[in-house]
Length: 230
Length: 184
Image (cartoon, rainbow over all chains, first blue to last red; front, top):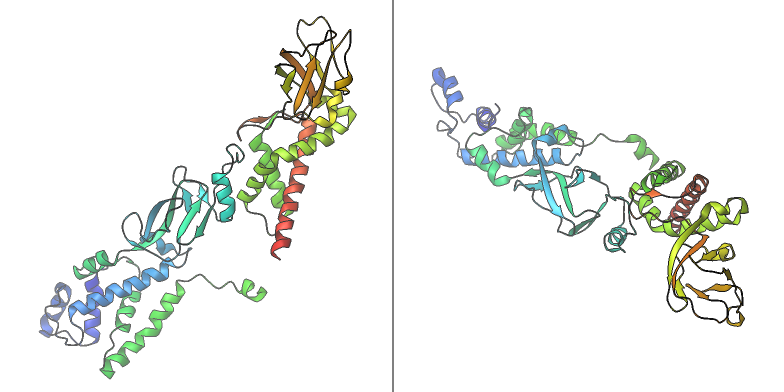
């Protein structure tokens, strides 16, 4: 499994922070997940864990910002709300909602709701004379800070990121969320290794562009036809 | 063959979507307009349908009314434009009732009389005149009953439904065109 130590020890190798007997370095490299062999005044282990949490948060936000990104499944959660409630900021699992929503559904039937009606129309449907609107209507509208719908209970497909939980998992050498994105984590961490030391900054800058390109690649492909038409 | 409210609605929905391509109206908006305008379109189509004497009888229907002191409430879906085609019959009556619009002046030694004033039907006996009280069958040209729920049948003649659907599609499209013009 891809854990936080896999990324951080690579970064320490790059900046030459690993101290130890060369003959046993490989064993130490594999075993020292607390980084007791590390000597770095610039980037102690806690700073690496903190930065890696930030990198994972950036990766998660990039993924969550594209409704079609298959990696969203890693972040998926449901936010259950009642029509008229405030637009949710956390999923039912407690994590903070990030990126764009997926589908909005009737919590009772699972039927998808669409933003097909204006808020005034929804008000008329919900509060109109009994028996006038016979059709089953499935629409919602956002009227920040609240959400209104033609059904009472809604469930929203959301992506969430729990910073506190992830920081704890990363500090404990836990599994990273995106197992297939090792280089993105590594590039992201390296891109953060900047301080007043010009050598660190120069090294870090080499990783900034590939990291930014990876983040950008998570966005939907450009619709050049629509752009040309506009 | 009677078709359900929702069955007819979806035929209208498909018609509106096809006609409004490439920017179809949202499904729920079409359905909401359909619901909200069903009563008025039903009345409009019924009047046009009944104007054809060959088809008017297809819309004839009966209601049992209760008269109190000569007054009963006119059924809501009776087409007033065709009141002259209506009849009032009273079970076990020994004489008939006929419509007589000149109400205040009228009385008859052989017939009971009835007429409509606004939403009220008035009936009185033959001479000596008394205001009728009791149960009577009122048969009139009516718009088909609006179903109570979307799964209920719309009990209308086949010929009527084939008039109703294009009229409803046209109405919904006209609403959307007004909306588009207002926001342009």
